[in-house]
Image (tube, rainbow, N blue to C red; front, side, top):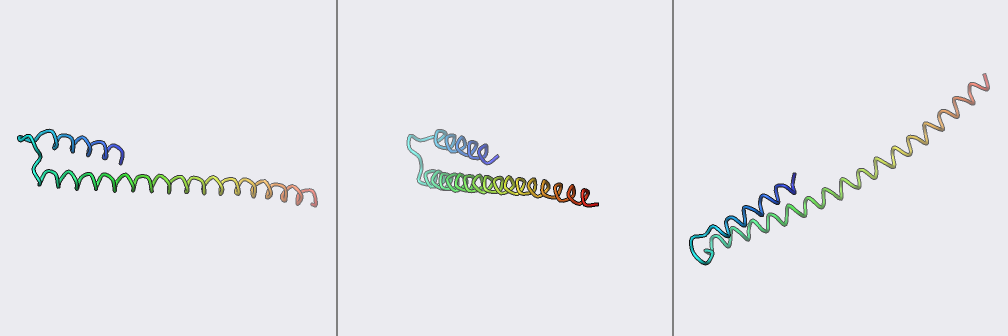
Length: 86
């Protein structure tokens, strides 16, 4: 979703840049472009950070799933031993 937003933002930047009536961009337009570029870069950094966070969380989930499987197997062994004792 954020990639789509960044793409739309870049298209918007291109439209602003190419739609000027004069040969050169006005100072105000240049400032707007610079602001939008900075915002785009910030959003891309946030996307990367969130993707890294997501990967870390997925890794943590995988580790906990593995530990859960090990504990379930151990529980089954204990239950079998209890059944043998009875």
